[in-house]
Length: 274
Image (cartoon, rainbow, N blue to C red; front, side, top):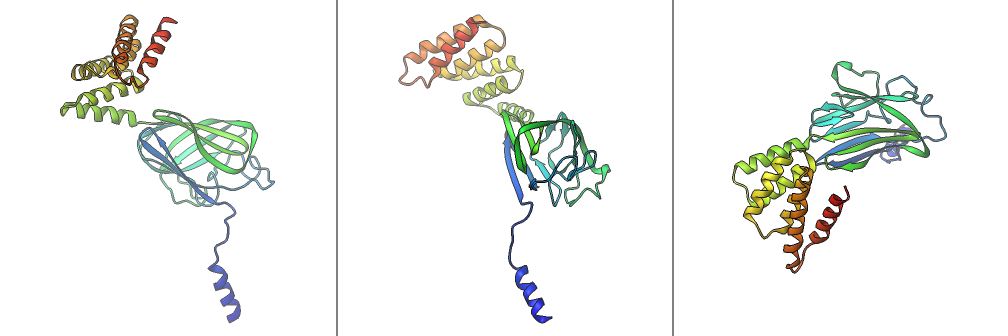
């Protein structure tokens, strides 16, 4: 008996591979991160959806402990507003669509004690069948924009896609407003104007800010290029072309135009082709 106990104690100290290894993916979206912690079961020759993972029943979305997703900023998850924080991610797979659930309880190891009262989000997404086979359950991110991405879940020949949009743009706009009220520099106005034209529809405010930046730094031809972009957004095509030509004239006298002559010519060509 003593020998058996010693043997068991010895082997308990040896770390062996997990059948469903854990993984963590941290993805920057906008100016904050989305972090997913989950286990990755393999197909291993089994029929997955509809058998191993039944249709119409809640699933921990992986193996072992329920999948956890953390949003460092408020976000829009599949069209629903979700406050920043950590949530368990459960799913209800179906033949044509899946229900995706976010829950405040992050320490569950299965779905048996799932508390619907702690559910913060429920969305329905399409389930797509793919030609590409995925052996190990995989959560990933693709198709990035300034403040958004698509989160995917793939296993066997099934792929789920969820739109994730960070609310960081609103916070940055507020940060810029606070900064400008405190006494900004030309670069502050310039960076603020670029942010507005690229991420919001506040083009009039962007024009106001870029004009202030140019007044402070009239030699900064790159600022005038972005003014041309803003004028184009506002529909002032003649003003945009005139400003772009001004950039070309000023930058031509500089030792390095940093590519703004080419950019200005491309903008003019694009406007004239409309």
